[in-house]
Image (cartoon, rainbow, N blue to C red):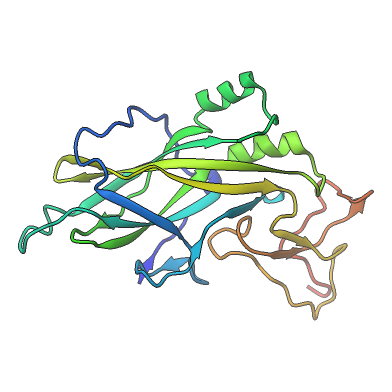
Length: 249
């Protein structure tokens, strides 16, 4: 079983992307899908894993979006050459767009790109063995700071959401040779209360059974039961508690 200790997404390292054209080994990595991790935020790296085809990221929880790429090696190796033909990934080159949205002006989009928030490298290291080997890699495709910028535009209204599309290629090294993947695109809905479920004001009754969200990141792809105060349907700033607080605790 593959296990990952995932650092807070807000601290994920991102860097400006250089050239994206492979010198050699182009297409040696095949990105298959976004894998759903288990309750311990672990994956198995096999073909039976559950797939997620679209993401949700709640802006109320101030976090980024974690992608778990299942990768397949398209490199072949003869017996005894497996080590030399194993790919070690170095990261994903990510571009984020907001198709059809007028949320950001052209000048703001240019600033987001220059700040490495919509155009960046998300480093991660994972071995992919040859002859069809499968492996899962964890990396950020929506930085927490980008989500914060979107949240500032949208405010606290529960009706606010916007669609983002992250397109990335994965890079790796195979005995000094650069290897890349095909481009892979993944859509994520960024919004308020897309994973947060507000039960009411805090605290909630002590017998309340609480959902705590996706194991790798409670801000994405699940439901987390929270409590908060509202005024005219909008959450009062600073009143949100996730998971919800319970009476007597």
